Length: 514
Image 1 (cartoon, rainbow, N blue to C red):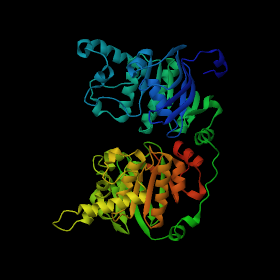
Image 2 (cartoon, rainbow, N blue to C red):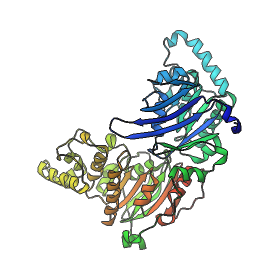
Image 3 (cartoon, rainbow, N blue to C red):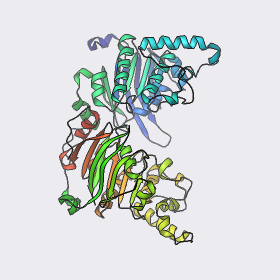
Image 4 (cartoon, rainbow, N blue to C red):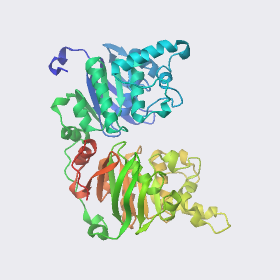
């Protein structure tokens, strides 16, 4: 794309001062400007919570903007539904692939049309025409459930072309793909933009693919476009990382006096991983963690960070290798992990970490009910209530009383419950998967402070977070994951948020694992 002629060219899509405030008062966008041109790939970046997802939902017609103007081909528009956006020529490929697994490829492509089997021949003709355009072959009658993730991604791209889209928004299209599948997506993106003249908005955390694939870059931070339509040729990975973070981050001061002495000088291993791996998810991992140590795992979506925690906890039935606690091998099951003093706070707290309809006290005591019970005797409700109330008090969970159902709590307080339920069990090892995701800054601060306090009592903690600044604040050392393996290790005192962003978002960085 010839950038010097941009001034005379009309954008295909132009956003002017787009803002969004949700009914609960959350301000997600604060006057975002964005111009997207036909025949170009526009990279859209930003840390979690920067406003990318909200902007995409507005573009796709899923939600409406609070303020600002959207112009499509020079005309003001406002989309009230995804169907209306599609009718105008804007298709969105969401991060979680929205296909019907029990239907065939062909049925999924033309699902929005009526009378599929009455016009099967014409659909097949259009299907083969699209395959010819993309130089890509796939069986139209194969069930989507039987396709690899990469092939499902290709079906979503084909579905966008069926709608006649002129602008395709791709939200993290390569996050869960293997290397060869990512290369296929890159080839298709280049073909659609350069050969067919489509406009592409490409959302990604992988900085190297942004540099290699896009023509322009816009970076959001705290709901504002802090870098707008910058030619990618004028950027590099370091500059992009610095802009995402919002400052040039110096190495964070490591306050040794905050860390237990045995962690500083080396102590007895509490948790050991020996060749722990899971086919297709996690490569062989060896790791030793001491009592009282907090190890942060920095990685992007699909890096294998959650898979590592599940393998350690015995929640992955396909995982192989050894997990040792205090030098003794642990049987590979969740009950065995809990008996050995291990607890997992999962990323999806509502589906995996809580029973939302249960009261707060009942949720906080679930892992320790066995310890409150005598053989042949039901657990005492008073004992359970007292234990649960103590957890509520310790974590400053805001609720009228302990009998409130968890589904009536705010996100931050519900997350505190998922942690509180492990405090009264004999838990010495805590695995925390995105413990601060989707909660307010006050609750985040409380949880990070609690992590440090628990480490002071000798508990061993592994914390996964997309917010690398939080990892630096809570951890003693940081492991960086990509592609299902640990690619780098850094003491907190010797790294920075900037470096972690670069390591996690760049292909094949120098591997330095202690």
